[in-house]
Length: 199
Image 1 (cartoon, rainbow, N blue to C red):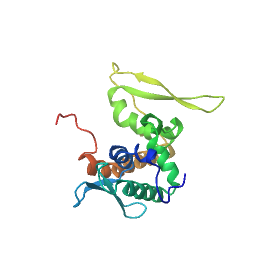
Image 2: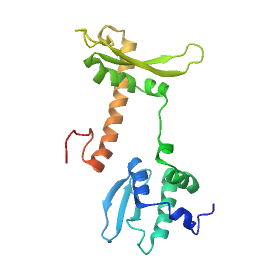
Image 3: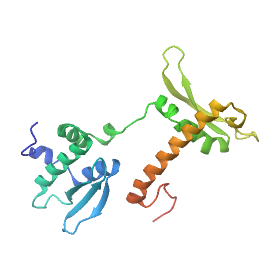
Image 4: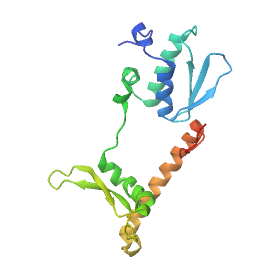
């Protein structure tokens, strides 16, 4: 598909403002108001400060041109071909869900911190099972010790220094990620952790 000059009308007809907005917000672009009626600005600072003008309605006079420019800018920021961006935009939502493999979830410290900070104090623990033959990792189930007064813990205080440091490194990484993502979520939604309130 050659998109340097013009997008096929069949592609344009399937690229709505809502589709592009969802795509950009899922990738931490910040939405800003535009002084021009009928337009919205999306902004990112990484890898370089970049703005995208999006028409809210298909009735906007330069709709096709602005959609093309938006796709080209997204491709530049993501350092990949524009055709791949278009494919992601046109894919059904269920096809673009990103998943982390269980091994990475464990090794990066997310399992540890989910258990340590949230589940263990409730007497629960999420289990990961490692296949002895293949090394494949999968979620096994949730341990339930809610009726035991001691609940569940990793026993970090009784561990040797190397084990303590491994726990500390993972905890530090997860916390740094939480803080990084909280900045974007606060800009987009006004919160880091979603409140249980009714608007």
